[in-house]
Length: 342
Ligand SMILES: Nc1ncnc2c1ncn2[C@@H]1O[C@H](COP(=O)(O)OP(=O)(O)OP(=O)(O)O)[C@@H](O)[C@H]1O
Image 1 (cartoon, helix red, strand yellow):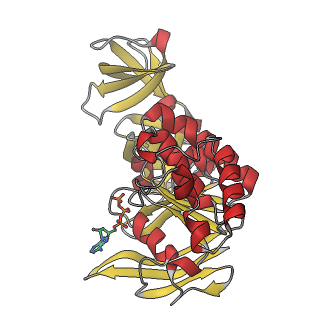
Image 2 (cartoon, rainbow, N blue to C red):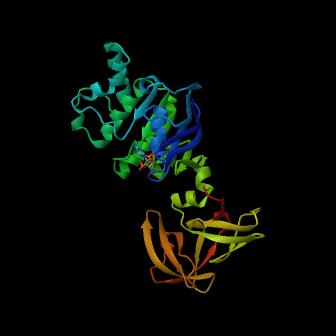
Image 3 (cartoon, protein in one colour):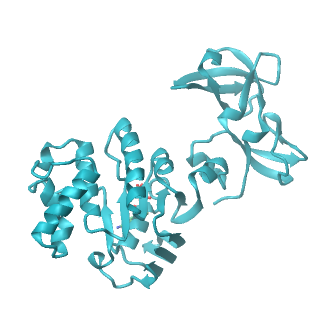
């Protein structure tokens, strides 16, 4: 459906998009993730035709899009900065793309009704957009983007403005809706929770390049590099030397998964792999902070011998108080050896 071949965009000396290769298959939902300034919006704008390429190609359905204007690419856009038209009612907004395509009035009305049902706003045609809640406005924007049946739907921070609870609900609805419609989606977000909930495949960007791509599970389980690991919020990362089935680290000997490559490496331990023991066993640590997070507690542990701090995740009932002295050991299946950057 979509292919980028060495797509490059430069602003001055800096490449905002640096020879990016990416494919999106029909019916696939791909989410591009990355820190601010990593090139996510530039990638989307280049595919939409809002940003010219300095090198490489964008192909849609196999055909090169250079010189093809935005409205002829058959892509739907739902961008942060593409606000609704405040002077038009809901139907006027949703029908926008249909009018542009010269669809007759009766068909416009039928399609608007259908889309409002689809996004959970049945009968909202005559409501003023200014009177809608943030979540409702987002649904109208989505209906407007879907109305012309785009072959590719592109979303830029689709739920960015909304509060967390609403975002979590909408993201599940969106995934179900896209699945039902068979929509091909390329979305951009800086919120990893959103990306992981929405996507069939995530693409992590760094400095205009792709740092990793894979299913949410693959990326979550096996971050390819220290950059990706830290971006996902894993901070238990140190230098290590692997010998046999364990590694020498500043935290002492840490077991590593079977078949791990030998020698120097960067090593990550998931917080769930940091097991808290009674004082006197394992690596001695002091509990520096404890944060309740729903069904578990996050502990920040300070090793006695000044090794880097460790994050642990423990069940609520086992969470020791700050100041408590504990021991720590590690679960091999929660240890990941990270590749070299990017
Ligand atoms: N029109 C422009 N002129 C000059 N530099 C630009 C322009 N647009 C983007 N950039 C630069 O290109 C880089 C990538 O920007 P881009 O907006 O694609 O990042 P992003 O990952 O979408 O960031 P954010 O999450 O903050 O929206 C940044 O360094 C940005 O400053």
